[in-house]
Structure formats: structure tokens, C-alpha cells
Length: 89
Image (cartoon, rainbow, N blue to C red; front, side, top):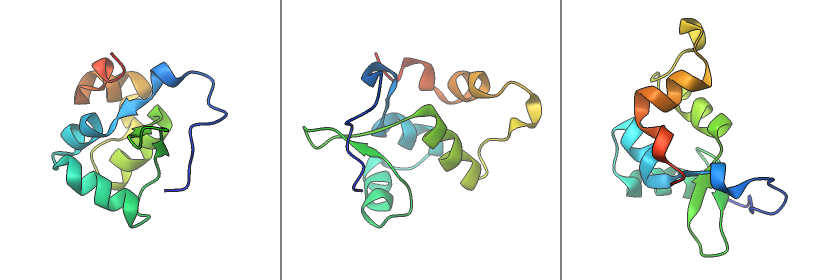
């Protein structure tokens, strides 16, 4: 949980915690607990809120067995298949 947002080029592309929770089918508080326990990584904004890069989300979904790159669609399939396309709006 020690990842700070400093150094990221585009904060608009970060994905919200509740969007990740929805993609995983768990409550947002569950995702927060995973971050707190060091099971997953996230960036913490100065406001205290957590955000994820698309790469982090791919890793989380892969660990959960919810995503595979076998379809050849890569990042596009993550965004389209889990509601992540509106994550930064």
C-alpha cells in the first residue's frame, strides 16, 4: 500500500477501486482489505482513494481466474468485458 501516485504520467487512465471490485464481483471493501493486507497493489491518491493501472487490473483479474490473454484481444478485452472502459470518467 506504499505506492504513491507520484511519477505516473497520466492520472486520468487510472481505474477506480469500485470498478475493480465490480469486475471481480466483490464488495469494494474487500478490495480495500486486499490492498491493506498486501495481496494486491494499488496507487494511493493524496485524497486517500486508491486507483489501479490497467496492468495492475490485468494481474488481479488473472490471479482471480477472470481474465486470460488467450483470446488475443489483450487490454481491449479487459475494458470491454468488465466495465472498465468508463473507469476514468
